[in-house]
Image 1: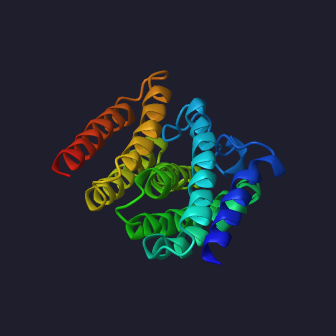
Image 2: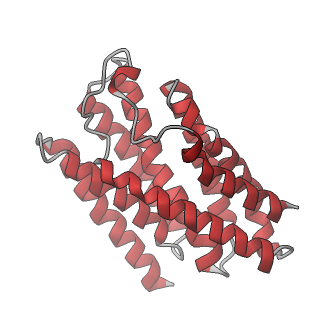
Length: 232
């Protein structure tokens, strides 16, 4: 039953963009202080990774449904992944109406996705771990960005300060997760993809603090992932 539920949740999650207008970040006027070109937000192209994530999740959960329906190595990670994907299926409509609740939900998605990744077995890297790793990796960056926009958009911090603080938090989370799952470098690859987008968006206008943090984070995560693969 869990293998059926997680596959259905992945399909529903992938269909959600077709049931509501596309989303490439919060609109500037969704905040009391409009966030026009916020330093924490990646360049628009970075959101294209969702296509890969959707396909990977459907393929992975589909493989689990037909090839590993009762495998205990798969069963352990399914409940947290179901919870994360069900929340994700409802996330876009919420994001278009309430950045606050969207931020709360994306952090819940991140937490449950990381739990699923931690519970994934060492076997079936391509079909089980890789889709969840890509998903959790992007959510790590997206959660940090959403929090930064909330803080800056409500005047609690300046845009650059919020970006540095929240991206720094995201990098700490990413470093810990990658060290705990050194057998899944795809997680860091997704975070790095987002950081490249952030770095590019901060070249014009130039924001040295956010650009420098992004580049340092890319280097640190790449090194952590490489060391994990080498030691494994």
